[in-house]
Length: 430
Image 1: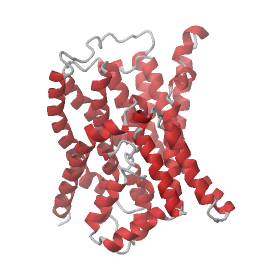
Image 2: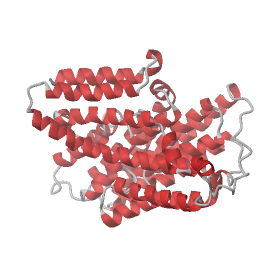
Image 3: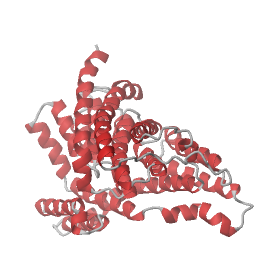
Image 4: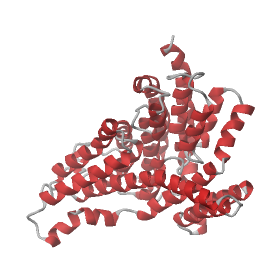
């Protein structure tokens, strides 16, 4: 049974990777793979009630992510419909695409810490779309945004799901997460950025001669309440981590609350307009513009990985690493790189179950390093993180293109940040 599930998963993964040569939308193989993995599990002789119960349990967690994604994308679309992002783009004076890449990546890095890496990547990609019209050039921005969002989210207790798990599970404190992970996170971004700067300058000379950012960016429309809707929307997104911290409810509940509030205010702002004038500025219109195929792709990938977890394959992999590798630093690195292929949540959850809190107390080097590797390892492949999947859907990025152009940069940043963490930790804990 396990072998068949692995074969199905690998074939599905290959179909996603080669979607362009196969001329196949990645969502189709993702959904088929997810359902077939569970079908094999259900037909293997396992108790049907138990399989259904496990699937429902996983679907509950997956739905939280999907509702969060839908809420964030809707708010961003609504801000965009009101031309709200001109509040930021109007303040960006550079017309140099290389400088702009630094600015957008730094915005994604900071937003990921105060929001989370998923919402930050959505906002940053929307900004790049407003400023860069050339789709080929914008792909490079999208790839760097994924690295920036994952690097920025890892050092905040609310910025990355793995750091949040370790924080809630009392494996790492908020203070330790910030002090020990912020510098590795910065290095994780800076190394790829500096290399990409050189690559992009060469590409601009060769392929994008004369390419600049959109220069007509300061003429923000005030008729649609651009600034007001921008501040309401961003304020609503910032409310999500605050709501979670106060109530301890899942992030999606705060996102749905924020969406409801933005919806409420948008109706008030346009209450005097007629229906035809109000329609393109409504939440209903924003919902219709969301790329639902990318959301379904996310669903397919996550239920496939959930099948691997339910059948015990991920747990067995973690235990096998502990048995045959032994060195905890190497194990953390392997787990981080594995999170580029399978979901980092069950990998981290398995690790938390393997290593006892009495042996490895709160703020132990293991937990901080695991937060770093699991939080940034997903940047190596485009479907290795929630931010990557969201950007993949928004910018129609190709799996193979990402591997050729971005994966090595992400890998170099990953190892550079790892080295910084391993050198920094003893200095901070003398």
